Length: 117
Ligand SMILES: NC(=O)c1ccc[n+]([C@@H]2O[C@H](COP(=O)([O-])OP(=O)(O)OC[C@H]3O[C@@H](n4cnc5c(N)ncnc54)[C@H](O)[C@@H]3O)[C@@H](O)[C@H]2O)c1
Image (cartoon, rainbow, N blue to C red; front, side, top):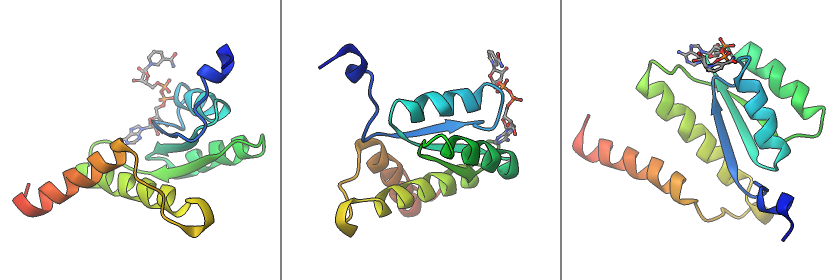
């Protein structure tokens, strides 16, 4: 494995919050250039879509999603959307196995459903 290959994020999913911001979009670009399927999340979806479109024209796998960092339900909904979109991208139409962080998100949802809060 080369040094550059050891930094590869191929096959990984990235999430950048505040992804439309001055700092955020550059992190989005970096994760996507490293090969991650990258989700860029911001409350300003128009600004985020503009960033995602521009990066996609460079051949990068960037998807804009909307959320509000001050609203927990909005954060959970954004994570569910990312898990759903990531699952849908499995090979040959089959659902791929969930990554540990995705399992964690779903486990958190199950716990809240069962125990309230
Ligand atoms: N720019 C820098 O050089 C720099 C350096 C060090 C630290 N920081 C810190 O990093 C953070 C981001 O910096 P930046 O320059 O990208 O700021 P920015 O203002 O350009 O971007 C922030 C982004 O967050 C989004 N946002 C605001 N409230 C939100 C909410 N409730 N839910 C979802 N999205 C929301 C905004 O729409 C915006 O796109 C800040 O906390 C900043 O202090 C920035």
